[in-house]
Length: 276
Image 1: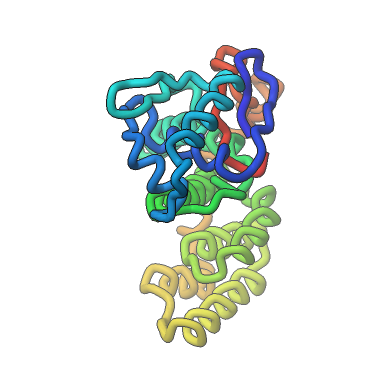
Image 2: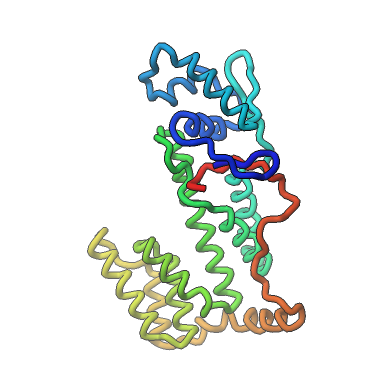
């Protein structure tokens, strides 16, 4: 799925055309050699008509408004940073992490939430992925996992533990061996007065780690379990000030600090490579 210059969704279909667009976007703003495109479109089993077929596919993409220019050795697609969701996602992620590192939790939550709102399903869905596209797709998936957990971290630090318990439960069910979201869920449950549930999360994760990969939880997670067992006040201390500031902010401004949808000033032309 992609959008035209009017911001309307355009379905270019599956198969070679979608695959070709993905290959161009992987190498956006650089010349992509013709032989490289042929090799990756047909996985080293190109028919005799491959070159003419490639020209036909490029003509069809141009009709959809894709800016592909012909050069001596190949083709180049021109894409501005604001036109590709993958780039926008990474930019928001960078801004969010910077804000998180300097302790600006409101700005961090805003940027990280904006990043996650760009996600439209599994990247490059429906494409017969070669090595390069597979690596790109996995990089995007891992970036999404990290950004989502950073967003949980920001909201947890803001004292929003109760509202993220449900989403965190869903997240750990999808990622049963990732310790960070389990620790976040344990903390959120404990801060919500659900100490037994927090300890159960630890037990379930430990059982999964031992049975599936033969490892014990890390020392950081074991320490968190001990803090919960001992009802250590430090677990609550981190979010107390931020939670009070959050409530004051809501009263003063009459709205919570949740993130708006993408800015209306963004260029609407996007090359979406997802289930759309």
